[in-house]
Length: 380
Image 1 (cartoon, rainbow, N blue to C red):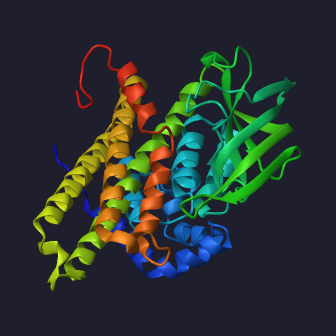
Image 2 (cartoon, helix red, strand yellow):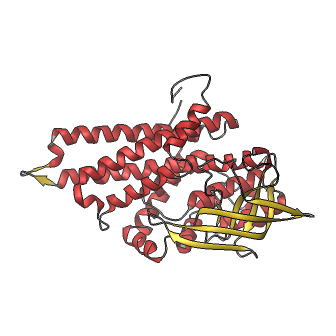
Image 3 (tube, helix red, strand yellow):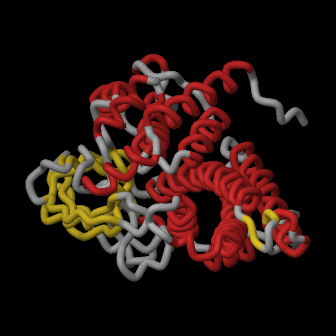
């Protein structure tokens, strides 16, 4: 199997890397954190690069690219610790709307997503759900051809700044009934929609979303809503895996540079055999994570059962690797690693948040177990 990237993908990687290096340095990131954790100006710059239209079909003004191109972009954004919810606003929104939405929603929103004029994020997490996608308490009520939603969602990325939300809601059945879940689009400025924004541990931004008879547009009816939600979450997991690889890659580079310059007993600490062994273990975990990120991306177009199992396997391994790489690199830095002025601690915080996103490591281990009844081993 050929794992080389195409010339176009390398050009895409180079353009994103240059923008991150020149347009999203540590000082600008610090200003964005202080201003709230999300910048629409930076979002506009990504749109100018064509990134917001990555998953939008060409007919709607996008680029019509695929999962591998998204992986290339996410690695570079992870390397630069970009705070804006790119995976949510471009990949999940573009992928879900282009694949599942009715034509009026496609005509009304996809062009705006591609142009960077609209930020649409997934609002699916509920208190008490414990990462279970089928457990949806938010209710949907039909009145003719119109719908209204009642309920609450938590940890919505940049929720108080987004233009609209993709919201799973229950049309019928008990709270855990997968057949009763439908997918809706809700505009943030609609009546009955309230948001409360706050900063997250990694410097980004999230919000609590409250819906009280909020008008909504039906995207996917009950019976197919859960499958569409699972697809959206799998897009998010694949993107997160690639972002984590970029973040870990850069954190390891920062750590190695520090070890080569930090001296103790008159010599660089990189010459100490025990520390060399530790950084070797770190690099092994990084390469395990990279291979599983590739695996997740390559499985994105598989049938749902194979895709869901592969994404759970990948997220489990990435969770293990993120925890190990983050902790070891901080330990190799010593006290400076956790100071706000030094970048290593910010990578550690981002990796910690990513480990908890879209199902933490323990949850994904359970998912892997449930989906591998006929075989054994995480990598089988």
